[in-house]
Length: 296
Image (cartoon, rainbow, N blue to C red; front, side, top):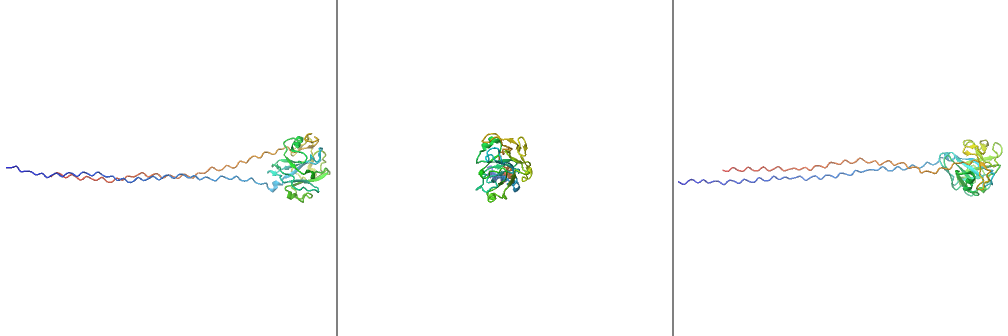
């Protein structure tokens, strides 16, 4: 008998498992950190120097007068002026004169400054130079030139000498002296000292300058409020026989006032930098392989 043939069903080929696909989310681009901004404080502007007050301005006084020198008149006449205030006083454009019928046609002081607490000598710049005055009286004197002294020529017996702060104040006032800033009406009689080759000086800078009892005659070696009496030297045209105490105080050189320091720039707080987000990767779920069918 023929053997029964067995027919085998072909086995199903297992389907290949699909490779899992991974989809990546795009990385987030980090935001750039903002640059910190610095705001600078504006520089402090220096305050302007205060101007002299009227009371400071009026503190200019005539404190010594050489109206009858032993040397040639009127070459060696001079007037000492003191600034008892705190601020410097600029005499540019001021007028010096006595009582006379001939008025100046313009201001006769072109320039000159008296620092606070210092003095100056107003001298006859028509007939002598600053070098002449220094040779006769010594160095370290703040000299201020006065022109047109010929119309001043201080009288040897009595006179009124004044300073005006401007030519407009002086105009029409050369005989009354009503608008003058400082005035001394001296005399060689009464309580006033009699000057003959020596200057007269105010004995107390706070005393009334119109009272002759407050003035004294300069003497060699005698202290004055602003110096010491001494005899001149025979130099620069001076005879060497004058006695006075022209103030010995050279004005200090003006020093530059330092500008106030500007406040250091204040920086605004730095902007916080946002952290860059980490890129997140989302994976698609892996496909599960289909089970292979069992052979039948």
